[in-house]
Length: 352
Ligand code: F6P
Image 1 (cartoon, rainbow, N blue to C red):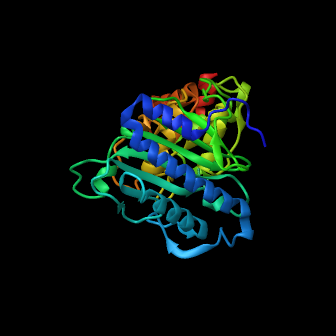
Image 2 (image 1 turned 90 degrees about the horizontal axis):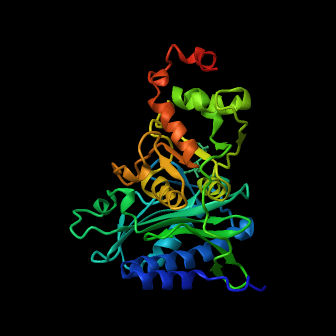
């Protein structure tokens, strides 16, 4: 099948970017390994049940207590195997209780969720691999210490989405976010669309609304205002989408704007939401910022938060800048400052 004339492939992009900035050579090697492993994983995912019981739960659990699926473990083994040939000092993975040391003197550390959204495997919904490449710390006192850095320190980050198309989304060095799509006929990623630029305004929100009763007041107020549409204080009609697969929701927002929210809530264990800072929120924040959007924990930029541990969770709100700023402003609005604020019920009347 012919490529679009002149379309650049991922390898060439990496060569050219690393030639402009020698510091990126090692990260480019890791990205090559991620691309190669993801092509293998994409083929396995594409076979579905023909390849085996991908979505079947194992008896094992990850550090967070989630039951591991067959494909979670297969994906983890595939990427860890691929990193053995790259300049990686240590790997942190959702599927590994503790980080793994590979080449102690190597310059990079990689954090990843090898297969995000695995509850969607059997439903044939898009799933993905999320990765974050950090500088390894020369004097790290433990493997974990490499990962306790601000997201702003990332050298490269992104995700591969396995959906109707398999696409690799990444930002490398100071470059903008780029999207490469896998040509399944020749097994290579090509630059098929222009670098995404997230619109500042949007009218689409993405949240698991079944948790409404567990949210804090500012989140309930924001979603109430979206639901009230043109008749409410935001004076605009909103649409809602929730895939339940972070990569799919992030990809949609890169292409057409919108806001994603997974806030902390009052369920046991969900005070800091569900998503992990190091290998979910931080890489997504990196590519969203490089595409003109914002990512916060409702108050602070995600990239300015120091992880408390490799598997630490964080509330995550990202997407179109104006919508994210609006959610931050609800969190500093004294009207919503106290949980169950007595004025909250009357707020709609007061603001209109
Ligand atoms: O991290 C796991 C994940 O599946 C994300 O991909 C997704 O955004 C989220 O969890 C969905 O959570 P919930 O099942 O609570 O809606």
